Amino acid sequence: MGALRGRGLRLSAARRLVLAALFAAEGPITAEQIAGGVGGQLPRSDLASVYRNLETLEELGLVRHFHAGHGPGRYTPSASSAEYVVCERCGDVSALDPERLDGVRERVRADLGMEVRFSHFPLVGVCRDCAG
Amino acid sequence: MGALRGRGLRLSAARRLVLAALFAAEGPITAEQIAGGVGGQLPRSDLASVYRNLETLEELGLVRHFHAGHGPGRYTPSASSAEYVVCERCGDVSALDPERLDGVRERVRADLGMEVRFSHFPLVGVCRDCAG
DNA sequence: CTAAATGCAAATTATTTGCTCCATC
DNA sequence: GATGGAGCAAATAATTTGCATTTAG
Image 1 (spheres, chains in turn yellow, blue, green, cyan):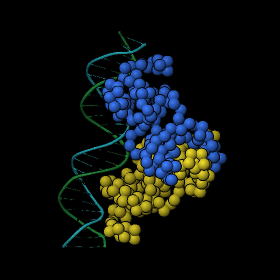
Image 2 (cartoon, protein in one colour):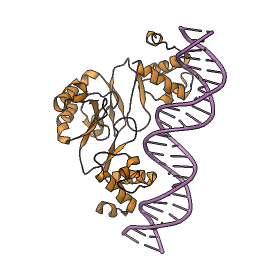
Image 3 (spheres, protein in one colour):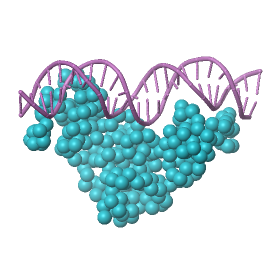
Image 4 (cartoon, chains in turn green, yellow, purple, red):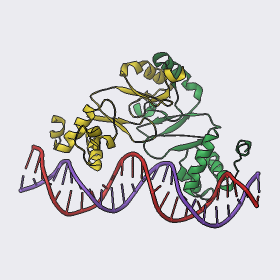
């Protein structure tokens, strides 16, 4: 909230609603789900405004989004610093403690000299259950 | 070509053109670029047909595509088994010998029990040059 | 000949933009 | 009361689908 006012931005009802939706949801959700009131649990709002607010909140570092595959982006509060892992077979999107990817990041740095980030494009593959 | 005929599919002019475009290009290209004749080097063709053909060829395992970020998908012949790495700062998309990711894949398997694939969503991060 | 595929138009999906009016600071 | 933001409509971008006509096998 201070983050908003500090830049002359306002904490409007619609904006508050976007944040409420993100925190109310169990996991990452789409703009459409937010506009739909997370399945009726919250009042519905305008989709274009939702997108505009998500963008603003993302610039402020309050929100993140990533892509689980084709289809709409998935948004989360960036308060939860989780990284995501997607199974391309069962479609499961699961959160992960970022530390659990430290070894992988280090390995990529060693092998490719690159600082990888899994925050926008998650790790995609076949999960243990589906490979089993 | 045998791959096509074997399934009752035809090697039409448009389909041949899609393959020609993919092989003529220096790297992964978009459907739009293919339809545009790779900048005039080849005859232009219908975008919808290009998409349909890309899908068919992908099902046959002759073509792959991945996403370098927001924007259209990038297609390549799957003959080149390269994996791709994208720098989110300079936008550079560079091919990589798949073996160079073996260590990373192994690390992910060890830490998360998952078989990662970087073929649809490439590794994204900050490259050596941009981090420098 | 006969199914598969083209080419064009129109529909979908995800997202962005313009603009007028409303509400927050 | 000035200006950021809402809400609605319309535009854009990427891709998909329907259908009448063409064409490869």
